[in-house]
Amino acid sequence: MKTRSAFGQHTLGREYFVSDDIFKAEHERIFFRSWLLAGHVSQLEQPGSYFLFEIERESVIVLRDSAGEIRAFHNHCRHRGSKLCRQASGTLGATIQCSYHAWTYGLDGALRAVPTMSEVAGFDVAEHPLHRVALTNWEGFLFVNLAQQPAPLAEAMPGLAGRFRAWPTAELRAVQRNVYEVDANWKLIFHNFSECYHCPLAHPHLNKLTPFRNSENDLDEGPVLGGPMWMANPQGSMTTGGERCAAPFAALSEEQRARVYYYSLSPSGFLSFHPDYVMMHRAQPLSRDRTRVVCEWYFHPDAIAAPGFDPRPAIEFWDLTNRQDWELCANAHRGVTSRAWEPGPYSELESQLAAFDRQYLRALGNDAIGTRRTG
Image (cartoon, rainbow, N blue to C red; front, top):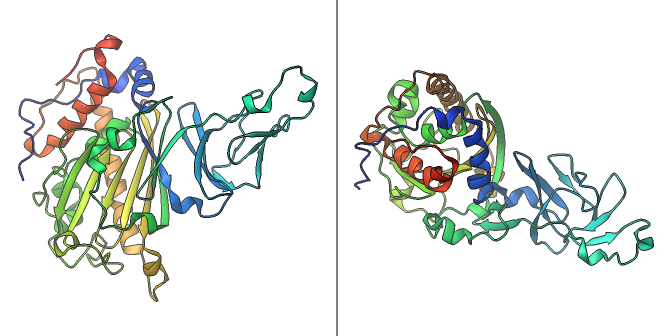
């Protein structure tokens, strides 16, 4: 399959990695307006279970209410703004109570109890529910959007539509979560994920399992980018030994079982579809030069319950690969922030990076913040 050429395209310029104004604009114009990969339904199995999704100054409670509906709210009390939930995840009772003045909310966000406020003329609890956050459940993966009236996920990310139904992602469960902090700008994480030009030198074992030219891109424009790589062993998987950790998902075709599918979901994450498991990465910019990456490995409950199930070959393989990649990203960051840095040309193996840059620049709207387009 042919992909859009990278000929004539260049990397982003230095200002995109060092400018405080650009970093601020990225949040206002990209992160606070886009659908962000937040988690998975398996994190909310019981009524009252919740987790926090946080980015920059924003904190969102994602929870399952008593009726089983998944909801999202801004994590602050409507009284004086205190954070309601302080732990990253947990289980709530029937209500959420502010620890400051005991304002109490139902899991549907409605204000239920307010000490002494009956003495305030005209006060109406119905006018002070928690602020809702837009939330969408796509195939078990949960996305939130901080915009007031965002476009539906299907319109914002059309590349997701119907593409991965052979993987029963809503049924899967995470067996491992690794959290990494990388000394690199968040965009370099996306750049690194989007090419295997570096694989022969940086990842010799990965390159043996999926030779770097064994790839094609079926999405090469827009916020969802990527495509499959076919494995040297069509009966294998991406593990330390090259064998599968579980039986392949039942609905996969023979071709799908012989491939790994890698997709970036700008601006917040990556999904990787293997024959026997699914992997999710979420990227959270902490500063201009530091990014937190959360990586989770998902298997089917039947595989997890099978005698002898051992996901360690998949976990150890990608943990090693991740750490190799994070060092590459950190080293690249050291270079692109140099005053002498000038944008370099993309190779034909880096067409996805050029596509990411195009999407990023469109979303950023550089002309509105007084900086130039590069590349």
